[in-house]
Amino acid sequence: MSKKRESWGSNVGFLLAAIGSAVGLGNIWAFPYKMGRAGGAVYLIIYLILAVLVGVPMMVSELAIGRKTGLGVVGAYHKLSRRFGWIGWLAVLSPLLILGFYTVLGGYCIEYMCLNLANLGFDRHAATGQELFAGMLTNQFGALMFTFLYLILGYLIIKGGIKGGIERFNRVGMPALAIMLVVVIVRSLTLPGAVEGLKFMFLPGYAVSHGYIAENPGFISVLATAGGQMFFSLSLAMGIMVTYGSYLHADEDLLKNSVVVVAADTIVALMAGLAVLPAAIATYGTQAKLNGPSLLFVTLQDVFNTMGAVGPLFGAVFYLLVLVAAVSSSIALTEVLVTFLMDHANLRGKVGDRRKISLWVSAIVLVLATIVSIDGLGSNGLWVPLKEQLSYVQEGVVRYVPFTETWLDFLDCLSEGLMMPLGALLLSFMVSWEIKPETVLHEVGTPMQAAWVQRAYRVCMRVIVPAVMVLVLMGQISDFFGLKWF
Ligand code: PHE
Image (cartoon, rainbow, N blue to C red; front, side, top):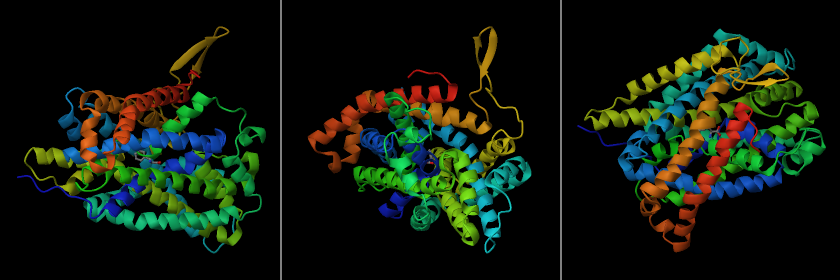
């Protein structure tokens, strides 16, 4: 007996969940820095063009594939395509790998939120951001416990289902995130010297002329970075939009929904920039670490430390904000796996037990997350796969290029670095040449009826998406493996 499949309670509920999946650590710790480093406003324009020409068509395609088949990612691709059906497996494997490290980072956010809460009301600088961070990474048991807590939080949401769990969380979480972001932006922009951060972020060439980075990256490299960032940030080629689309009602407008998600994600990325960069740069100038975990857990904690008695309050609000952004992304990643297993049970005539399946998925994620958390971003001397594998000989000496320094790097390199652009490239081939763009256009219906929209969609899927994905793939390989193509 197969049970009736769930669906979203409303289109707004779906939108908030999709925006929640898109808005994550990528928006907060990567976008603002990448924008500043790669030419400020110029980067933003390139990013926006790519978001329109690549992001929107890819998102429409994924949502349409999900809604048409009414299945999670493995079932959906298999149902539609004989030749490319297997990419569904790529799209369940990469979320699993990403969860392996996303969960640990989420745990760090809980830990930092607690640290700031515990300091509420005190004006004390017990430890610097660097000391706190190093202490956290090397305290393996502590980190593991917070990772575990984060996983339990995700499990509690996921087991509530699409409408009663994911939609409910995002209905409260997303508006709350927006409010907290505005609070932090006001504080950040009113710090003396904040304008320097805005210049870093928006003025072309400022990062180089003021010593934040050594040299301007070339155009192709900017294009590849912007493309990769856009993909990760919009949660594309991860099975998420197929999965979320499979719970959408037939009468929802997929084109409008895609445009709203892309716009909201970009706006939040810019807002996150206004929240973090002016504060970091006002306090530390060119010494500030502006990217990745160091920005979040070292620089910004130091900024809160310098704020006196209100510092812990802003700190607690900020890390709660990051936590909400992370949770809404990781429940989307988890749902890809849960939906896949639920559908699998359904297809075999059984009724999938969401609770049990969520528990199993969380347990599998825990295995990976345990390794990442014990590794502590390479602080604890754990063996890391593919470490120092590339070698070259220079002046008779064999030199090694370490391209995965930590377990987080390793999982990120496989998933975000390789599987995501590869999956997207194959998806564009599948839509363009096997199932044909008409399948997607037909599923979307009226909103994409105009002849020029249809023509534009075909050109994007056949030419622009594959070209950008090849560039992104080359860019990621050069980033991760230290190879220089451009
Ligand atoms: N989009 C999320 C971010 O910006 C990360 C993510 C990637 C979430 C892929 C789900 C899938 O951080």
